[in-house]
Image 1 (tube, one colour):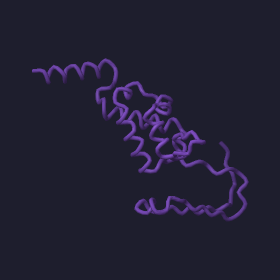
Image 2 (cartoon, one colour):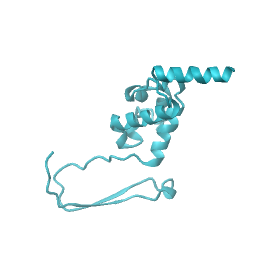
Image 3 (cartoon, one colour):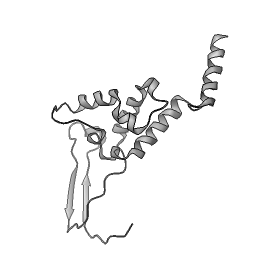
Image 4 (cartoon, helix red, strand yellow):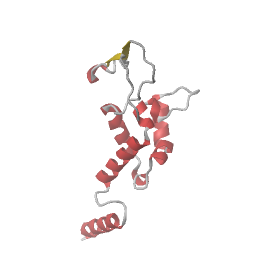
Amino acid sequence: MCLLSCKTKFRIFEPCEDYRDACPYILVTVCGEHPHPIPLPQKTPPAVRSKIFQLLERLDEDLPDLTPRKFLRHPIVKSYLRECFPDPRHIPTLIDLHVSLANRAHLDSYIIQAKATHFPAGTGWEGLLHCVSDFTIFLT
């Protein structure tokens, strides 16, 4: 990495969350010459993040061995994206929801959080033993 001397001033105006339905746009103003590309957003907005977690909850038996690649190609995710972006000429991806979802490490962290919630003992042998012990307690 190298330090770039950039004297450009950016002002980004986003509507408050309560008003995003009425105004889903962001205004960016630039003062000065900008000789290098703008960095992509790193943080996923809370509304998009909660929708990702809702999709992860709907995956049921596919969640234990889920990877970001499998999540991107899962039929539930694809059908949700087609509902959000119905243009038949464009195959929607998670990047259409937000640019930060292009980073698979973000998706992986969300998947790990969902697995930790649904499988507190893990998805390995300890998790299996935990499920079996819960099942035997349920039977007795």
